[in-house]
Amino acid sequence: MAKKKKKPIILIDMDGVLADFDNGLIDIWKVKHPNKPYVPLEERTSFYSINEYPLLHRPLVWKVMMEEDFFINLPPIAGSIKAVKKVARSGFKVRFCSSPLIPNKTGASQKYQWIGKHFGPQWMGKLILAPDKTYVHGDVLIDDRPEIKGDQTPSWEHVLYDQPYNRQIKGQRRMTWANWQEILL
Image (cartoon, rainbow, N blue to C red; front, side, top):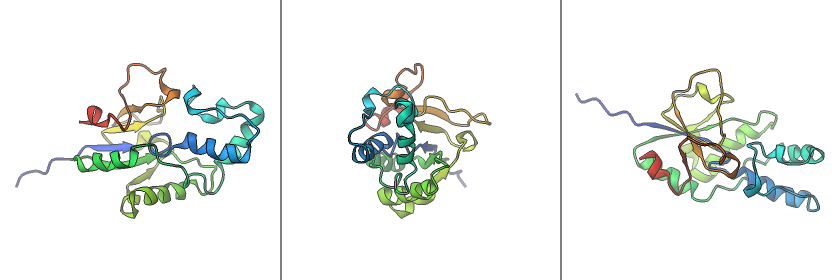
């Protein structure tokens, strides 16, 4: 009996890769604090959006991120849903791998709901929540975080999802949903 070929495992981060964390935050910020400045995504230089705001405004930014419905209402990044479905049809085993924002009491369940809302309930079981992604097995991790540290030596290659705040990183493969085929295939 012929051995079945193992499908490569593609781990895909959520915030900043699938879900538009930054523009979702800005949209809420503009409603709640219309007279306070915000930092457009294109001007970001730090991975953590809260670090871009003046110290005086950081508690307000934190409060927005702690809202009960913050994660479920994040818009998808343009092209992400369609591209991920194509990745799965191209012979990859897709898993979502996200670090929960632990102080947000409903954040973890909202991430499952977000997957169900945008991909369908059959995809919800593909979500792995891991504060330390180095424990998660896979072949490739697509993540916008410039550097991923943890307790283990990862089994995956980190492919950087291109965002303004990680463009200073050189020498690492990077992708967007427009060029995923060049990178993964």
